[in-house]
Length: 284
Image 1 (tube, rainbow, N blue to C red):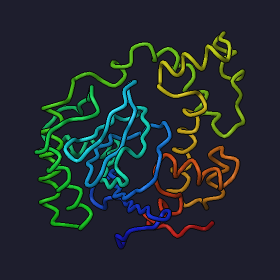
Image 2: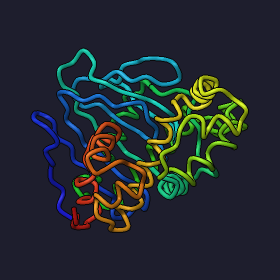
Image 3: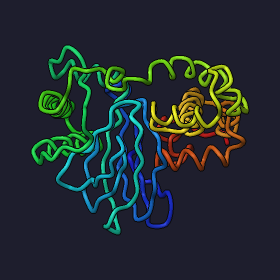
């Protein structure tokens, strides 16, 4: 597949692709002059470096700035949002490592288990340089041995310097009971037109209590969390070759326009760009 920039909006460009060698590894090279990321999470470890400018992000109840001298990291399923900061431009590179990619990186790094990160920003110019070089090598289809060396080095140093042995579930004490009861409902019924009463009544909560407790447990509102589930369902449908319009409805969105809007707000690209990165010709 040819790697080339894809225009997303005037003065905005994003290049998204799947690594052909490491399963579950996706990459984004974005150059934005205006873009806001709505509160969301990824079912992947996110590691990002800033090349130009910077952006503000909010996670764990704190707002910080991603700059050129820091590494930005989000654990899988860790809620966060982002927006342009004081700079008029934000050019950055992100790696999205799903379970298979994390396992491969851990194997190369000689780690017996993936680390959990208790912070999001790490001021470590050496590590920033490693991940920047890794991302560039993957984008340029560089020598495979060099790619593996950089992935092993970056993941090993990141995990050993800043990782914790705790699991993500252990770090979020108090969310287990709530999510344990609600997640299956949301997963199984994500294509339905759910209401707050549908979710709160079985728990013996008022709609307001549900919103408050859900936000405390996940960092997201029930609607934002459900939108995440629908987006991930849409990704599965698109990977399976379903036309974009059909994938939107099957995932629970009102129509393709709604999917496009949420997809761009969360991932920074359109469904059509995602389909192109899979090497599938979109049918709608």
